[in-house]
Image (tube, rainbow, N blue to C red):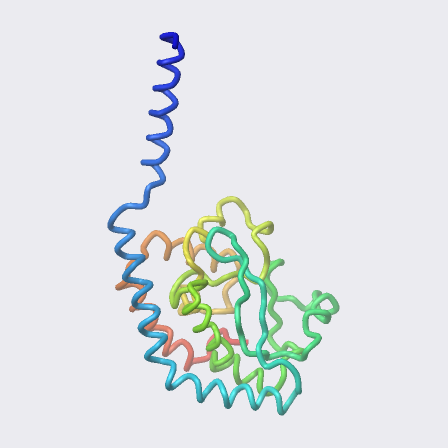
Length: 228
């Protein structure tokens, strides 16, 4: 092998080594992610005896008002942009997605975000479930499946192709059931504010911050501010 070939080979190896070191997850972050996962699973399992009877009642009320599927599965971008099926209790009529185009002129947020304060597609029991956030309870199963965390950026209802480049950092971690913008105004916030708060969480994330957000979520749910 020629001297030039040897030098070129060493250069490639050094470049690869630097690349691996650059993207290697720090030990501190690894410990946090492990602790976060243990925390999520433990809390979900402890909550199940209380949650399952509530879910059964919610499912019965949904079916009695509008017979059909009680769960709504929606494909949303998860960690790394990988789509997953997020579970929610169905709070709208069964053809709600088809009616969205007809109601686009009533949208109060910046597209592709979508919100109508008095959305005509929402059922009576659906309004109650949304006000109390009970419609989000099935996402505990997403947490147990490792697709979501209790705390993290809320998965958007639109795909990653709609993201601006500076918004993609929210895809670096697992999405959450609750997060900073859920305790700071919920649906009253526009998309830019939500993404800004998600970015703040990503840079500040810690187990203590997760606990603080969970504790703040309880009064936020009871106040019903920004819940539609």
